[in-house]
Length: 330
Image (cartoon, rainbow, N blue to C red; front, side, top):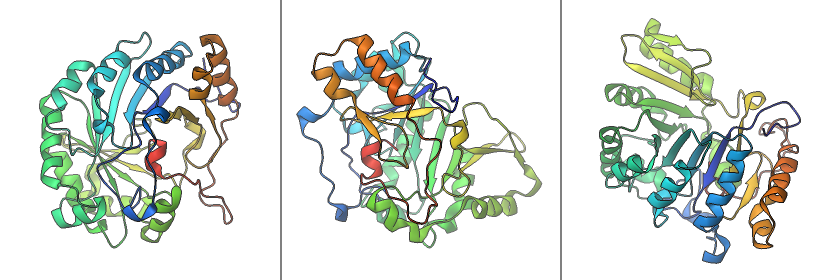
């Protein structure tokens, strides 16, 4: 089993399959940030990705989430998903997507073994949605959400990064939209990761304020669900009457690092131990040097022991990670 120096068992791998994205979200990878995509030779091949995921599974990882960039722009992703789902030990395969390309791919992905999906949905207003995403098509995303539900992905979670003065007036309407469709709503604080995240902190909207708005809207119908299974870092609430659940992710204002069970593998083969730190190790280089499986497992184990106790997003003089969120897999 992979256990870090603080006793946290690492069971969850966020697996980035590309650093490309068909959106330019203001808080993640805006057009002005000048981020460059990796060359084809820099990306892990499917064989390398499958091999590394297998080694993580052999060390106790049970959950894998396919991320990006936007994972659905990676050619033949369905074939890779099937290979990952078939690995011994992998019990839960999920996907994070902006939903733009999801509609025709939802059923093939579900057939390949993708059990559930998180879709970014920062606004229900087409103009606001296009502004945040750099031109995204809200109607296509909404059709993708319906396609995921129809394909049997469960749960379908909708993620909204709440931005003061941009989409914060939609907190209640987003919740009602999700609950009406049996989806789970997740509100996320903006994080100061990369230049885009740092610049977007002027729109920071704390989780406490989000929760206050939801409490005022739902009243006594909003009931806390402590330790909700599959909730990840979200503080979850059940809405009475069987309407569904809502979660708030307080990455900055109330960290959850003491229960962090995840690491990230970038599309370039870098093992990232924490979103708030720059420390990482290249597993791609080890593979391409011909390193055998047991030696790579040892590299992974040694890296896990260096996983930091927590991020330092609130430190006055903290060093902001240089790479944008889109390179790190969210």
